[in-house]
Image 1 (cartoon, one colour):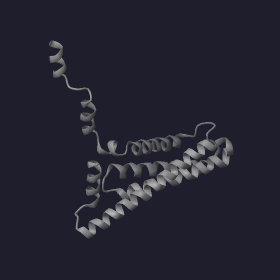
Image 2 (tube, one colour):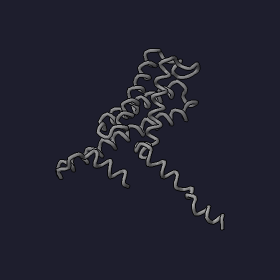
Image 3 (cartoon, one colour):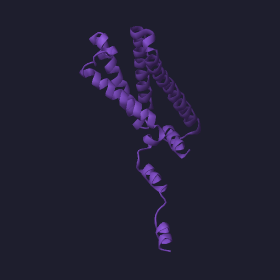
Image 4 (spheres, rainbow, N blue to C red):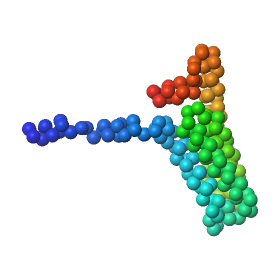
Length: 170
């Protein structure tokens, strides 16, 4: 009898993740992978400014090329994070994704030229990330272009906020 009272008085253990989810920023629930990857790109670009690690591809490239690549990562990741965290800055997010995608494809080709078949797996991962970033930039552009066109024809006040609200409900 006492055990039954305790069992009924206790909350089910499955409720705490849902309570925690309502306190998190919406971007962590919508696109956690994008936030994680862009934060890693920002950290990677910033640490490359300090100096390349011995034996890495950056160590074999000329210093101006390494600094240009690092700046591209930092600018692209910063713009991508800003656009991801601000609902009205979708054009900034597209620009950041284009910067990150281009930097990744160029870096992947440099890996292929430097390490040839020994670096084929790393090249495929980096070029795949670049292609995914460029594809995501195109998808964001098409989505918001359609939303803006529909909003203009229907007379909606804020198409971007309306589209994000609809995504969260799904």
